[in-house]
Length: 369
Image (cartoon, rainbow, N blue to C red):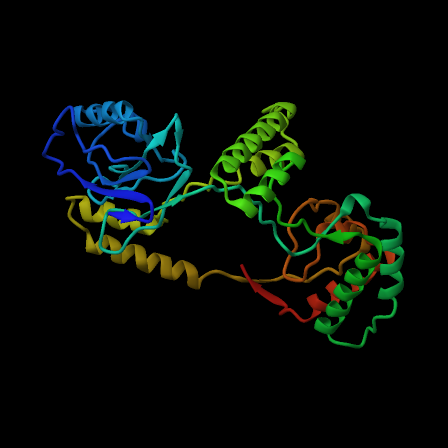
């Protein structure tokens, strides 16, 4: 099939038919793409062992200077319903000229309905890694003025009335902390950018956008790879202590690679027990099952009810609980981070103890254990 100036060959080899060597497939002029179900096993594309069909196909690809587009981090292109495993019989080969193959990336999509094969999306052309960060602003805790935050929070909390509902009081409390944070902590967000884009790469990218010359794209990709390689060499990675900056650098340099999709089906203990009962050939004792159900019913009916008096919360207990909080965690539904709570003053912590005592007074006095 001719698509623009590309030639695309759709290949299918039945599993029981071997390749006709040495000319397995006709040689298409550059640029060309071979896609389809090759049904050939080779360790290069994820199989544990290589068969004769895989060896013949691999030799033919080397002879005609074809390159395989495959990401080993992605899942297989075929999910066997019988063996419950993933395989990769569907392949994508591209031609090259002067040891420069076509610029292409391939990604395996989700399962296709009523089929064991997964669709493959192949993008041919120049692809530059672009990091798309979260547009929501983040607090810069390293440049925060925590004494100012503590003073402003204590001053605002004293204005909250005690004769209002707990919901309104807590809402005003969160607004007070958020207002104190906006005045004491810088806030911003990272923009969308291309990692390792220096002045030379930016100039090449500008020239390519104006002219569309493929030679400029080759020079641009070589320059990006060189700058990424230099940046990787400067970062000394130690497995024992990976800092946040080093992990962030690794993620930025591998922004193009998508994480492999995890195909894990949750299995509950009840489903395992049901399967064991169905597979086992032992006879079921219905009398024993009835006795166990009666004993369990009697046990639940005889559980005593105990009364537990809620002791009032103290400021010291609030302080000990706040000290156990871990920093660097995500905010909850109220957008209050642990850093805000750990930098509260004595007035704010005393106000929290009063609110907790009011909340405990609304709970029932008896608790079923």
